Length: 76
Length: 353
Image 1 (cartoon, helix red, strand yellow):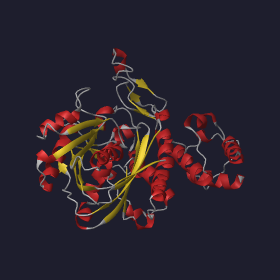
Image 2 (spheres, one colour):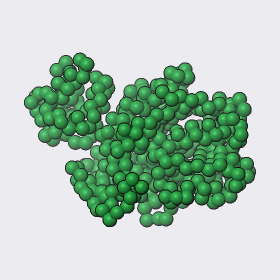
Image 3 (cartoon, helix red, strand yellow):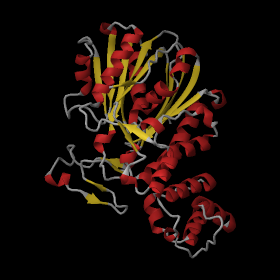
Image 4 (spheres, helix red, strand yellow):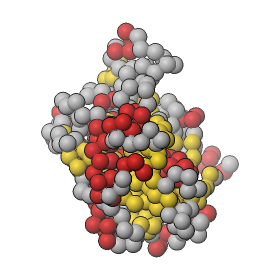
């Protein structure tokens, strides 16, 4: 689950060649912009059938927190 | 879900009009440096837009030009047009209704039923459902649906989240009572909970115009706009579009046993390429069946479905029998889909004024 998620998130951000750690604050990535944000929303919808509202998404800071949110929603 | 099958009506023609004036995104400083401009065009697909900027052309003028051309090509007697519906967020006045003004300008009879509908991107779908409902019983025989917007007049030129995406257009669709025709199959939905996702906050009667309405404020992305201009929560609208549009199309197909593999063209609201591609991928439909007009005209609000048919499919709809699935989504929030089959459609080229 974790490695698949990291792989997908890297693909969305076009960061395939780089490290991604759970503690990373993804908004600080050079690749993070409005399009990356939309691509992330689309990836979560396509891969996990999860929709995170814009307001809720704003509260999520790290890669790990995003993964936890995905896990929490999948277990509901 | 709200499904309706309006029988005994036939779409007889489409016409569309845009302003001659072109605004290119390729040299738009608002978008940033040349790399940022290239990325914007690559992801949105929007290279240029036809806009009313610097002219006195308004939505009703473009709808009028479309209607005149369509009525002429159809050879319709104007006195036989029983109803006219105008769908827009950019009518001439707060009141009277623009449909009344258009009835007079077109020289239609005083017996003509007229109605304004306030909707944006989903407007053609809801307008079609309304006019089809009026005609299907045969009381009214001929109707004309005028759909358009001058969206660029509602955008801040300092707002890169909306200004470079929109173009202006006005269209006409002709509908006639034909006993035994299969008509149109429709799905419509509304979610007013999302009404703040796309909104002009001031200038209506909830927040009347005040001197503060014209004060610009800057958002976290550096976009400047005042309260008489469109605010759009891009991420919320994106999320809404990629989830609701595929469900609407699949729901309609399921309700009426429409085999999506047999549909010839999927004409979708031209929001932007990035969003459309996500919707197309979720529906698993081949991209060659999805025409795009946004590269040339941008997002033209409620005009986008008829404008895409006129600009991209006119030869086909004139000469072939086509199965067409349409879907639109936007301000309201409001969305829906229509399925129809075309035969002998009148479809003149895009008019420029």
